[in-house]
Each structure stands twice: as structure tokens, then as C-alpha cells.
Length: 320
Figure 1 (cartoon, rainbow, N blue to C red):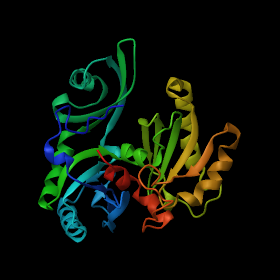
Figure 2 (figure 1 turned 90 degrees about the vertical axis):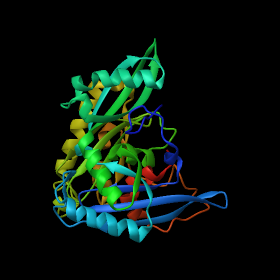
Figure 3 (figure 1 turned 60 degrees about the horizontal axis):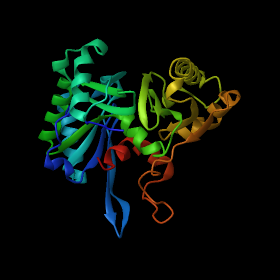
Figure 4 (figure 1 turned 90 degrees about the horizontal axis):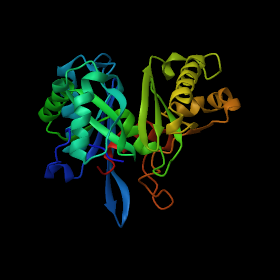
């Protein structure tokens, strides 16, 4: 698998090798997390969060640059952030899959660039993209491509620079979450259900690569309880995506597991388990630290339920 980051296919400059924190900027919250090595083990060196006033960011769109700039400056100073890898909300990205002639990274990236305008409603010159190679056979490589508007990266990069933070890379949120919560050795397809307060992201991950994403307007604040009636919107959306995947993309693996993310996720675990019982799919709350920390010898200073809010930041903080 290869991932190119959002600097197209150019070799990363030396500063990208600097130790960095993961920085998630969402509609509701700014979160950061950083790892360091201590006595031969990886440990948490910093973490924190700050609530954003309602309306500063809406659906991934920055609505109030002044307020966001102020919040980033305060947050960065409080936590001593310098180099950061930054999330891009799913709503601001496009995802598609394509087959390209097998070649070196530079050649594959050029081929994908030629295909951008066939797959996203933006001029190629107005985009930045990254890609993961899923397989190569018969002289052809299969790639999963994430694309974001260049203007969004430029605007967010400017706000970070004003806050004295230096982005080493930008990454779409589903990829960051998947890096943290999907086992590094996974071979089957898994469905991540990231429950936030006002929306939920559903991502299909096959062999560690995000292949499908969808975000819809149902969140933990949408329900009064965890009974089946209140969760019906969520179960319908999961069933819709499951049916689509199983009818179109079984070559990339059948979905065998649903992984729940977000601090509210445990509330819905049993209801969702009952809803998919007949399909044979397992349902489990995510283990955020599984790919980076040895919890048998180190207990991170974040409560287990709270860690479910840090999945994106943790994935971003992991080594590039």
C-alpha cells in the first residue's frame, strides 16, 4: 500500500520527518494528540481538546475565520503545538477508485491526475489528492483516491501558520480514523461508524484502505434513548451502505465487522448488534490504541470512553 499525502507526488521535504502532533479540526471541537518514545515504548506526550462555538465550522465549511483563528492560536499555545498533521473533514473531500497502469509512484500519480476531472467536479489545477494502492495484477494497479479543493487546504494552512503551527501534511478524516481503529493486519472489509453529536460518518475499509465514505445528519444528540426506534435512522443507513457494498465491491472483501467510534458509541453497541444479528456481522466498540500503544505495559492517561473521541487525532499522530 502506498499513500502520497496531500502534496501530490513530490518528495516530502525534510521538515516532514519532524515529530508531529495529530490535530483534528471538526465542526464542534479542536483536538490534538502526540506520541513520543519513552524507555523503549510509545507513550502519550500531550493531548487536549477545545470546544468551538456553534457556527464557526458547519459541515466542514469554515464559516467564521476570525473565531477559528483565535481558537487555533489559543489551543496551539496552550498545548505547545508546532508541527502538526491535520484532518480534512469528509464533507470537504471526494473519494473514488480507479485502475491505473502499474508504474513507479510518480507515474501512477500522473495517471491519476489525468483522471481527476472525470471523477470530481473540480478542475485538476484546483485540487490536491492522495492515493492508496490496494493491489497490482496483470500490469494494472487499483488505487483509492482522495481529493480535496486546493483552496480549502490553502485557507486552513494560512490559519495554522497565523497560529504558529506548521502542517507537515493534511489527511482526510476517515483515513486517520481507520489508521487508529482497524488492525494493521486486517484482510476483510470492515465498516467504521463514527458517531458524533450532530452527524455520523460511515466508512468502508478494505485491507486497511478507505474505499467508501458517507456522512449523514444523525448524531448522538438526535436521540432521546438508545432503543431501536430512536436508532432506526442509523440502522437504515448502515443497511443501505452494506447492501451497496455487497452488491458492487465484494472483490475487495465482504463486510464482516462494524467498528463503533465516538464517545457515545458504547450507548448504541447492543442495539446495533441486535439489528445486524441475522447477517452474521460482529459489532464492537473501537480500540483506539491497538496499533500504537502496548496497553499491557502502559496505561494512557485518557479514559477508555474518552479515547473514542481521539481516534482521528491518534491516527494523525502516528508516524507518517
